[in-house]
Length: 170
Image 1 (tube, helix red, strand yellow):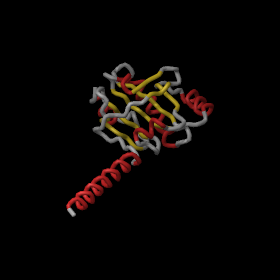
Image 2 (cartoon, one colour):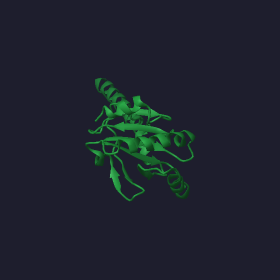
Image 3 (tube, rainbow, N blue to C red):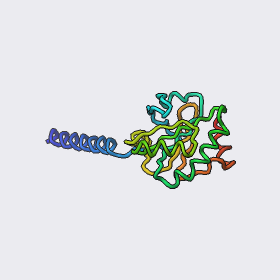
Image 4 (cartoon, one colour):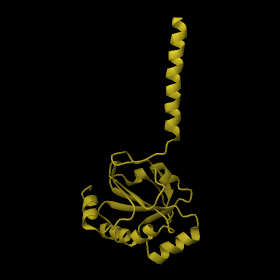
């Protein structure tokens, strides 16, 4: 009798453990402020292979966007000016586009004079690792690889409060 109760308890514990493992494996990641930023590997449009750790010692502004996204197109000029103004300060901008059409993407970059590092991830693997499925979304990652700020939606990157809060991470 005791053996049957012990067996039932063991099956119950194993069932709960299995449910937790399955839940953890299917839930979508959602990177939040305070988390260690997931590593990634992208090849930029200039041909450089970059990972998150390549930005060690710098503040990384990691922006997920697309040419077909109106708020992304709206924020791009201010993000470009932000990068130009803060170049050389230890703050680096990396834009990762989820555009599938390479020609449209490249024409957009050229037409808009984008000067920060960009990469195209048509399968959206890197954004998915961060839990990003709506664009634009931006993660500000400190020199130690921690997410210190997260912006969902369009941002005016030249807003003095935004610039100041990111400069404060240096």
